[in-house]
Length: 211
Image (cartoon, rainbow, N blue to C red; front, side, top):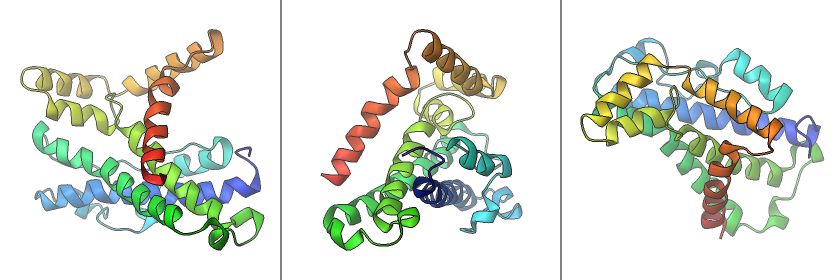
């Protein structure tokens, strides 16, 4: 199915909205539980999608099938505490993937294969399952501003964790330059670092949950 195919576009938008909402809410909730009041002051401790969706990130879902949400801001600077705040987002997506995946695993496909082609229930549920896995794995990449950068900075012992946290703050565009490099490699030599690293992990998680 093409990204702009109506039978895939609406399920993709629904899945993306659910995944981003729970991802950003998890960041905000854990920060709030740690005593950081900024996410609550900015209205982010909520499951209202409108509080978490980024306008441009949402528009690009319709154009290229990829987007992003509004990052949760917080005042937590200790790298060990930032570890838990950052980890909350991917964990929320994995939990959602497990819930929807087990539902797909144990409920017969015939019972779920209902609805019109453009909003078939089986397709919607599988898209939600897949998008949550992809979002979780992608965000674990240790490049700023992704969650993985703060997670790895929190896991590593000093002085390596401190050094990584310093570079995360100093080079917030690291992911952007990596994506450009990966795109150029794909166009010139047909090799994608991102796909090579992520695809086996995503596939393993899908098989583990769906059986």
